[in-house]
Image (cartoon, rainbow, N blue to C red; front, side):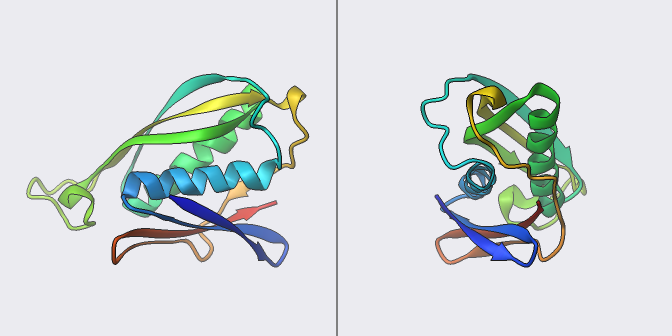
Length: 149
């Protein structure tokens, strides 16, 4: 699992890879944290759980990242050290329709909430669908997400 921050006109983008869909989602979330703050490793914070449901794999990624930004704004904590335990949906992660005919996707994850009072964080306003990519590649998954700053 890895990520790279990419300049994107007035915004910032995260390009991420992972061996699994779960690790790709976690890598994008870790990229979001890195785009928000340079140093947060020793800033403490409690772990919290995140559960998200959506109608598609891409919507699940969008809603997951949007939930992290919402929690930062509401709780005053920067979510860091992301762990995505499960991503489930049609076709067992292949993106194909399931035999049951449902298109529902879900995610179970956790992160550590670092108090914003303990760090010097930049504001990331929102996740966008602009240029969003989430695709299976040889050996894993690639994701590209643009954030409004």
